[in-house]
Length: 227
Image (tube, rainbow, N blue to C red; front, side):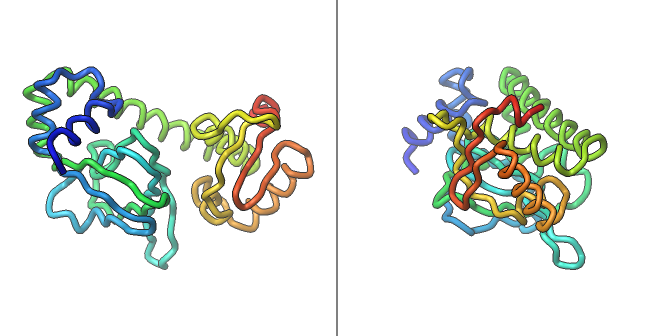
């Protein structure tokens, strides 16, 4: 990829938006850009060294498979977010993998060692990165609190509210989300079963709280869903 295109991608990436031209060029020098297609995967355990991945565009799900072969979806990564063997998640060897959900994604990747050296050189980059890690940690804390204190229906409603805030588009009927998750994937994200999620989605439809199809989810009143 040409240096000018690398520079443009990094300059417009939220985490790097306040960096100087010199700092962006330093990032360009050590960055590697990867273009991947739907259903392709990245297995973190296969990386020779710990790597950070910055999602330039597209959607990715982070999953892990247990000893029985069951997939557990741990997160959905959207444009502007990062993932990989980052400090708050790499206490133990990771069996996580990333799967591309959208038709195509562009990733910018660094080894953790390279990125740490760059943060030592540019403290403002370290500050931006620590703020991003703080946001991810708060997201994890919120998810764990939901698991402890909310029943499955409340977790489903909270998940739909968060999804609508992130990706919902205003329309005449309310907020509309492009539905790219199966019932099984939603169930994994809220620690439930597919059957339970299907039953609860039907309940929400009957209550008029959501309009649901394979391709779209419409939320007429986000406040009512959040209540």
